[in-house]
Every structure is written in structure tokens, then in C-alpha cells.
Image (tube, rainbow, N blue to C red; front, side, top):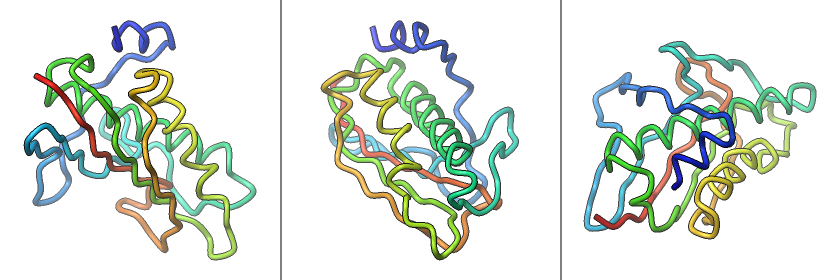
Length: 151
């Protein structure tokens, strides 16, 4: 059902991105799935780079949505189906922003919105959205997730 919702939104999940470092993309423990930070990778390339400011807020929001799509791809790779998700517990959003930028929550909102669109009430989650001095590969955003699931 969740994957049907994605299709209705015009979203096709990509292959889950592979780590660029010495870590694994997801860890299962009990009924929780911890997804490592996802950057805006499409086709193996970072699609949104640079510092976020008031001037490029909409671009940064697109970056966050790509991160969320990659989170969904990781969930599907790990669980086999998005329908096993019982709750998106938390998203942690990091925004590569200039020091005076203070709208990090607005940048991460599209990622939160997508989780609600795909999972309904199960997609409502706790969240942080913080500005940082830099991110891997100069990406605009990075988002990780904690997901509850049932087999």
C-alpha cells in the first residue's frame, strides 16, 4: 500500500545508495531500523551542493526531499517492503547553511511531509533540524532516520 502511494505521488524509488565510508547503511535492532544519514544522491552523484541561505531555500527543500526518498529506498532494501513500517520514529535533518540562516526546519519540512504522505499517521515523527558548517561531499542536506517495523 505504501509503495502504491509513492507511485501515486510520481516517485520511483532508486537503488539504495551505498555508503561512502566505513559504515553500513542501516542497522536493525529489535523492531527498530536505524538508517544512516542520506545525502541528496541521484544516480551516484550529489545533486544539490553548497551552502543554504535565504536565496536558495526552495532548492534546499528539493535536496531534503531527495534525502527522504533515499531513506525510503534504504527502508525497502532492508525490510523488503515499506508496508512493514509501523512508525517513522524520528528524522534528524542537517542543513549545510550560512551562519545567518535560521530556517533549517523549513528546509527539512519536505522530508517530513513525504513521510506523512507515504505512511499517513504512521509517518508522523519527532525531528531535529540543525544548521551545520559543512556536510559530506558539500551536500546541502543530510537526513537520518529511526524507523519502527513489524515482520
